[in-house]
Length: 154
Image 1 (cartoon, one colour):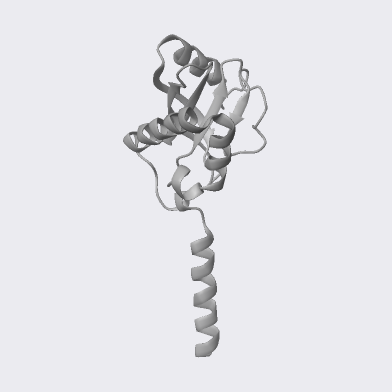
Image 2: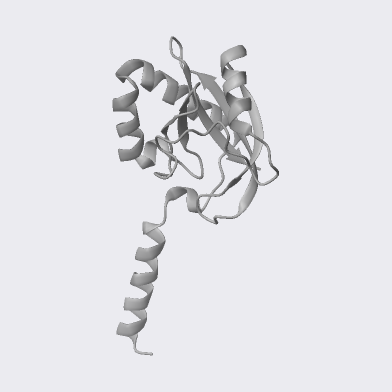
């Protein structure tokens, strides 16, 4: 293979690697998930949900580091923000994980009752698409019947 071809191939591979989302290479920690959750709740309080959702989607580097991302759900079950467009606007109360757990109901109950905490469930990893164990930190948005969740894959 000529040096020009090898250089082109190397540049193409590097370009493809750089286009991969940041979370493709590294997993977030529980501490990072909680910090991102705190930041997302504070951002919603500051600019409102509509603007915050736009910001979350537009600034992936800030709001979706590694394999972390915020999601926002109303207590009635409607998903107001999620990395997956398929879940946006959908009622997620009856969604079950691979083992049959209705984790959305558990998240709402936790946020409504205690305000914050962890919920364990199974979910597809955004890069590998494989079902993995996940723990999400759930935190109620003060003054609203909704919560922000940020999960870590275990």
